[in-house]
Structures are given as structure tokens and as C-alpha cells.
Image (cartoon, rainbow, N blue to C red; front, side, top):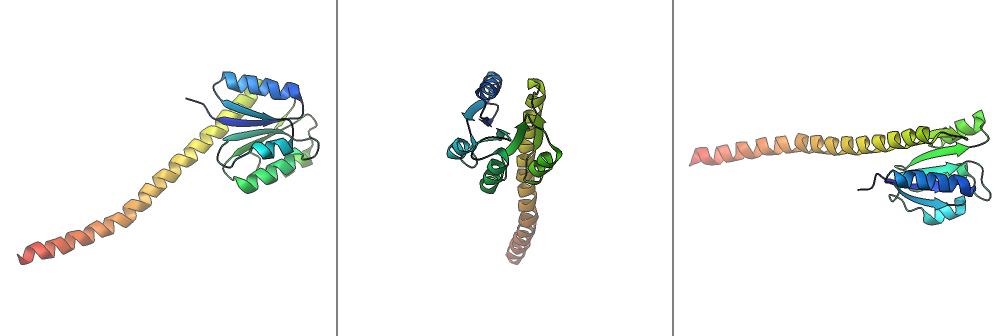
Length: 159
């Protein structure tokens, strides 16, 4: 069983390869893209659990990629990485829906924990939605069953 599906987007081949190999070794299915345009071509809503993207890339940067992906899929977790940290870029990324902001060079263990935490949150939210759905079903079902019980009680009483 796969641990999850990750899209890695970075214009630096070494970073892409390192992240790909590391997460693939952990059992994740990893797809890579060299830039934002390529990432948009590979992105399918609902197909990825997590996107790990560099902030500064040619053509479509990480922030624009984040905006476009979040417009298509509000459920995917987006981790922004950068070698040039700035408070305003971190704030903008978080405002646009990034789950976290990671500064290069990063420790692989740290990024693994962030991905695992994001996927755990996603699974927990899905479970809560199912429980909420069941709860709402019971709220609707109980009055229906009580009504049917009354109707059958009246029917059997007259016999």
C-alpha cells in the first residue's frame, strides 16, 4: 500500500531528485516537475495528497502555482520551500493556503514529518466527515423510525 501521492516541483534537479528518491523509498508515489507550468500539466484535482514546491522558479513561481492548484483542489496540502526566505513571502504563502513554509537547506527528517503530519490531518478530516455524515443520518433516521413505529403500532392495535 502506498503512503500517499506527492508532486515535487523544483527547478533544481538535485532537489527534485533528492525529494523523489527519499519519499519513494518511504513508500510514497512521487511525481516530479521542473517548473510550475509542467506541474500544472501533471496536476489533477484529487490525484495528489501533497505538493512540495519551490517558491522561486521561472515562468510560474511557487506562489502562483499555489494559487492555481488551490483554485482546483482545496484538499491538497501544499508545502512551500525556498532558499531565499523572507517574511512577506512566508506570509503570502500561508495566506494563499500553504500548509507550511520550509527553508532550504532542509533536513529530510523535518520535511518527512511535515508531510506525514499533513497527510495525518487529511485522513483525520476525512474520518470526521464520515462520522459527521453518519451522525446526521441518524438524526434524520431516528424520527423516521419513531414515526414508522407509531404507524405500525396504530395498525397493529386496530387488528
